[in-house]
Each structure stands twice: as C-alpha cells, then as structure tokens.
Amino acid sequence: MIKRVALIGLGTMGPGIAARLSRGGLEVKAYDVSQGAVDRARGTLDAAEGVLDRLDIRAPPSGAGGVHFVSTIAEAVDGVELVIENVPENIDIKAEAYREIDPLIAPSVIVATDTSGIPITKLQAHISHPERMVGMHWSNPPHIIPMIEVIGGEKTSAATVVAIRDLIRSIGLLPVVVKKDVPGFVENRVLYALLREAVDLVERGVIEPEDLDTCVSWGIGYKIAVIGPMALLDMAGLDIYKSVSSFLNADLSKRDDVAPVVLEKNAASKFGIKSGEGMFSYTPERIKALQGERAHKLVAVRRILEGRE
Image (tube, rainbow, N blue to C red; front, side):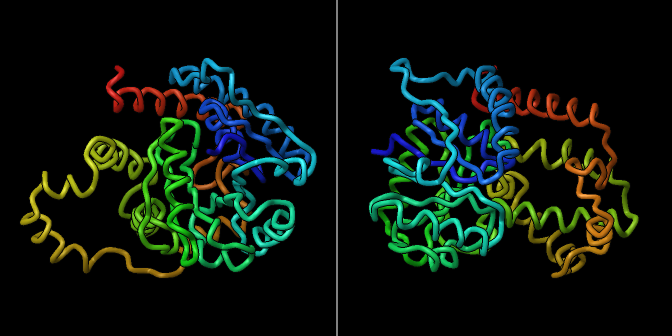
C-alpha cells in the first residue's frame, strides 16, 4: 500500500499535487533543484490548501498526510513507495532525474511521471526495471481538477497500472486508464485539436480572441462540462454529425506545424501570464485577480457537477 510519496520537481503543478496527495492521507516529501521554486511552492501550497478547504476536502481524522520540503533527492526518495517525477517537459532533463533517482530506490518503488504528452515508452528507456514506470498525468490546477490519466508504456506491468489507478481512487479522485501510449495521451490530444482550430480562426481574422473565448466557454465548453463528447454525439444525433462532418471536416485546420502567430509571440518572449503578455496583456494586479476568480469558478463548477450545490 502506498503511503509515502516523493515529488521531484515543483514548478507550476507541484504545490497543487502535493496538497491534494496530502489531503488524501499521504506523506509527501517535495524536492526541487531550484531554491526559488521551493520558496514559491511554499507560498502556493497555502493557496492550494485554502481551495481544498472550500471544496470540503479534509485530511483523514487519523492525522495522516503532510507535505515536507527536503533539500536533496536522496532525502526525498528515502523510504517512499512512489516517486512522482514532475520536472520540465524535456526528455533529457527527465532522463537525468531518473539517473539520479534510480540507484537510490528499490525495484519495487513505482516511478510515475506527470509528463503532459511524452510517450511513457520513451521515458522507460532511461530507468531500470521499466515495468514499474507509469504515466500519472494530472490536469492543471491539480488540486481542483479531479481527473488523472494513467498511462502504461510498452514495458509497464499491469500491476503498476492497477496500483496507481487504485491509489487515485482511494484519495477520492477519478482515474482514467489510457489503453495505448500515444503522444499527448487523451486529454491533451483533444485540447490541442481544439486549440489548433481556435488559433487558426483568430489568425485568419474570422473572430477576435475575446469573442472566440466567449463562443467556446459559453457554447461547447458549457455543454461539455456536463455532457461528454461521446454522449453529445448521441444527444445531437449521429445522423446530424454525419451530415455536418461530411463537409465541415474538409475545411477544418489541418496544419501540422506551429501557427505563425504563436511563433511570433514566442520570438518576442510573449509567453502569456508568466511574461505579462501573450494573446492578451496582463498587469500583476490582473494576474492575481484572474487566479482568484478562476479558482473560485472552478470550485463552484466542481461542486455543482458533484451535486453538492
């Protein structure tokens, strides 16, 4: 049974992951090579804890759980049953982390990666006992979004997949087992298909960015929060889908590169909220307000979807 977890790499997702695991009764030892990332995570952890309070997700009455920041990987992985790797989305960086972790853990310790889309099979090549490596893809913000993808690579054992699936269920979250190790898994493949069309429509002058967001959030987004795509097909009617897709599919964006508008903004270091400008512009005050507003709305929507409002 998994009770102790090492979280390697904090970044954007780390504090939320740590907070949610802790609320599930797990002892979490958190590590990052950057002291700055650790300092930011300490502050962000408090905010995540506050959101979990609003969701009424309480720690077990036994007092189990807790997040402890440590100063070395060796200290992080000592005595744990699960290591969650959450370092930057780069195979070389991840491989280096595995090389450091590998000699410090027993073959029975599961190594889960929070990669957003690198095939698990590729990552398994960089660790001994690849049967114990599995994808555990959280969705941002991880302390609010309850769905987690579980992905096995070519050499992942069925027992490893089951162990992570059961762990996710045991702390009140929703595991989704992805049956094939495809790039991007499922969530990001669907998301990036939507984003490709959205960026293309804006770039071609079909619609302004603000109106695109309104269209999606209050149109398909509003419905899909309640009725998933496969159920939506049945609701709309497969005959209607056949008719519309027979002409619309041919006109949808098929580009297999990165849209010029995205390349231009990257070249100008306009990355979005993190740099103060992307598709939109942000002041520090606006960023703080957006973070609070979005967390509040996501909490409210989740409570409604769970039938608690």
